[in-house]
Length: 114
Length: 113
Image 1: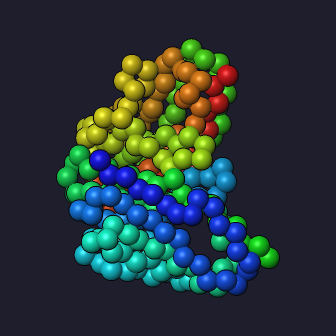
Image 2: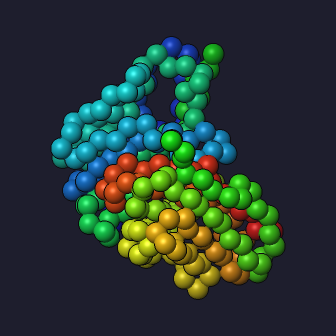
Image 3: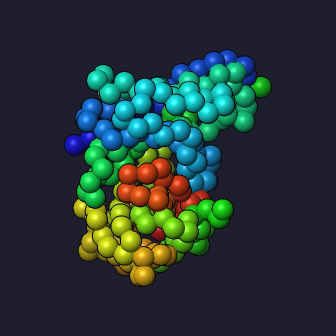
């Protein structure tokens, strides 16, 4: 059974700081990994999708890396802004078959202080 | 492009009552998911549809939860009878293929008193 862990559970940083969020998973035979952002009372917004054959993906100030062998992914946020405050969730999919499902971590709650 | 639509956004009911949530996925997305998110936790998959067929409902409490996706487009999730522990946000998501990127709706927040 795939288990996904995100550390830390909460993080508070001053504006402008570069930061790293961590995600680890127990089954390294993943098909893809996706990072989401969730604002309070809202649904999930997809940030980055990394296929198993990829090592990283970038979008603006965000960079996500994937190391399947060690069961880890990191989300790097450069020059953080107060608007980045949200909960960040990672989710992994094992296999492309119809029975595969996306398993989520419990998220890291990020606060960026002005 | 319109996103995933869900309704209602909020619902308060008493235990043992019934409730239904509706979801309309992004046009052309064959795969539709219902997730349950309890406060402070990550979403948990309840059911996954591929077109109008169920491909994963192993975590759906079938004694009280049911879902359907008629004609392979919009979907309805029903809870009957509701329990206190069903208080959660019910998220609908869709993807173009079952291995593709997921897009979520705003969610339906259920409070059971």
